[in-house]
Length: 457
Image (cartoon, rainbow, N blue to C red; front, top):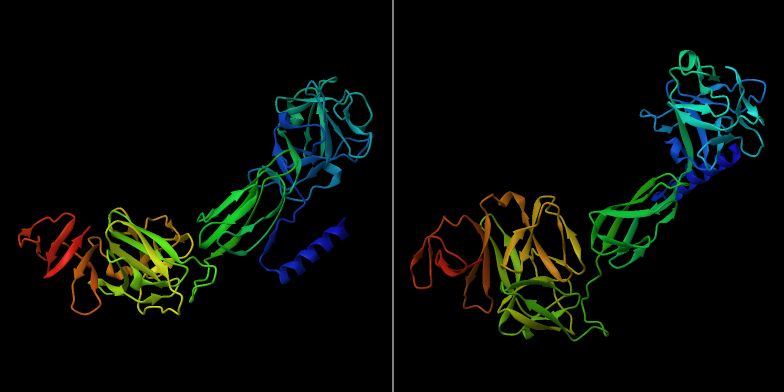
């Protein structure tokens, strides 16, 4: 047995050196306290007095009482944490009436009781059925209670007073430790991974939740990084177990040129809020956009504003942008020629569902509200931004409690058109309606502010 364990740990050490990301539960057994009523035939147990932390031995035969062997218990006494020798292990036989017999594995010997204080023995006597009474093991024929005698041995008394009065009997059942083998994973969105588990019922969870699980198979559903925990429940054979690993889910690679098997067009919906974000896997020809909708990138962000700048021509796959226009469905044409990546675009695109936290580094993340057409701070717990969308990181130092985004339109004679997203306090400047009338509390719609048209959402 020693050679096997020694070899096993040597192998584990070598595997750990070669494959540092592999996590495996190697321990063979756990000894966990259970109620006597939960014992079943075939269970292997240690019989322990909780007061003295001493177990009953099985190797003194029919000539002497069992020795009280010291065992190491956890602080809450729920588990034996030290070595459990074979000399304190008993095999349970449970009768139909609930009486218990304690045998030695591989033999015909069992625990029995003679009708005297030092009459506890191991052999083949018929006085071998026990029940639990007043917290003690009690032999059913002799009516004697079993307890630890001054920390040295186990004896059988006719009353629970006197020398064994402090005994508190507990049963520690041997459970196999579940074998959970996992390793750190990098998966593309949609790929799967199956942890190797031998044990009870399996539960797989991820924080943040960027996976789905079915029949023990994990599927990556959102881009991001997570800690995945594989846990098993306890049953008659196995103790509960748990192992964790790191999961990284990656997005697909965007295309610089249209692949042969790509569709000719893609469809985008601009909602009632008149604004939408979009990020396509393939290059797009923005010159063929419908005249009712225009594409913009988010330019430089300062303490005063974040500028929306018109995009035209062809843009590479993976370039995020904002669409502004009349609500409805629009068709975007894929570009067959080489495309460019516009400079200074602050938007971050999502080519697959992506978990986005509220803050990261020096930035606070905002997502576009489809219903209202404004950018709103992502909630504290983070969120999964759908595929083919975008979010906007804003330097946290620029934000105040009163900050909000106001979308400003500024017509220009040049071929490009600039929209400003201004972070400001609404009371800083006067606001007028399109008839030139000052408005104290503007609602949604078009207004004039600081000499420019503004669209307040």
